Amino acid sequence: ANTVSLDSVELKDGLAVGGVTYHTLFLRPLTARDLLEAQDAAEKVVTTKDGLTLIASPARLSQELLRRQVKCLTEDGRTHNGPLGLEELGRLSLRDIAAVQAGAENMDAADALREGMDRRGRNSGGAETA
Image: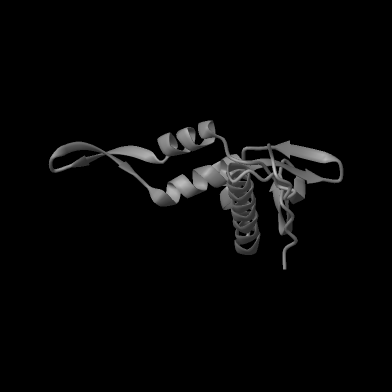
């Protein structure tokens, strides 16, 4: 199984970029800007019998969010900075993209849990806040 920490994912098959095959991918939390840009990128204008219509693709939105959540790839002291392009994301093996998706979901869940504890008056260490 792929190794996943809160901010990094081990890529079993790796991703080749510029002659280097990277096996460690680091994630970062999403920002409001990421969400807005991903929503914009997931929309397209199509022609229907009623004229032009703007449609959004939920699958494309997920891809756009995931690629933006990639902070960087590393291998033996070399770094490829994110976000990944859709073409790069698409070259991941099925098991590696599943690991990246799991890592992103774990990071999002941890962020949501931290925010929930802060709202209830506790910090992420469990101590009460003033």
